[in-house]
Length: 327
Image 1 (cartoon, rainbow, N blue to C red):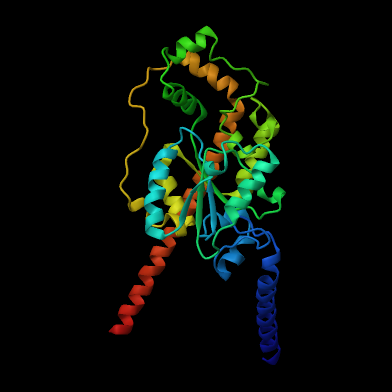
Image 2: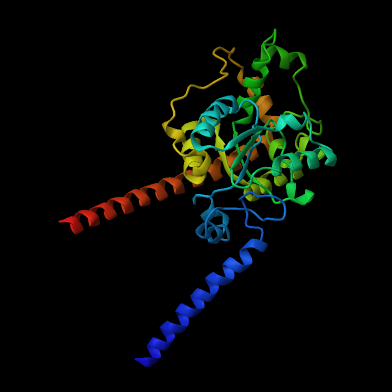
């Protein structure tokens, strides 16, 4: 009997020591997707979040986190105008600041430009949360000596996005006509500033080269390490649900807001199968990246739904216990 009691005592003390070591070491460790000023590490809100951040990615992406700095480097033609209208409403409701990164310049390719952006972003009150947005390629702030903020984005099937972007410019000819004439043809190895994966790969030149496999791999890695949520335009309501669950400090009650999709093209000519097939051919890496994000999002969505069901069940059981106590 005494031996068993000693074992229990030993286990409890070791567990307590482990927790205390976690809290002591946590401020000096890169905690993943949080967001903070340089030299402060990433802030996730509570001691529970500090522990969660040290788990593997598949666990952390379904657990609410509370970053102080959140960046939305909006991909064009992926519902970003609608998202910003929602964010403005949520900003008034939750009291976080809303900041357009365009105020620091149109481009951020040079290191000096990125440093100016970082100083502008992180020199803000620590007691508030801050939301940043712009059509901007990913910036690796850790290379600049800053802790990486949290990032979010929304993507769309590359062919659908390309067609939408083409007609957004109100051309005088159809996409089929443009492609047949050669004016809309692109080739692998060429540089294109309109690639979707470039927004995740970053500012390096290779990130904008069509068909570059290194750009694809870097973009995937950045999604896994820097982004809390990358949603899908095709599942916009579900994207809001995940954002609401994972980032409640910014998106709490986002699904309760009534909205209409903004900046939508009502009529577009039907694009031929031949043109669509040609687009799919040169967008091979773009499509692979989209499918990677899509698979990741669906896993995240299902786990968020499971977590929400679990929380509702727990809440119901607690209410039942309260009733029993009252009786």
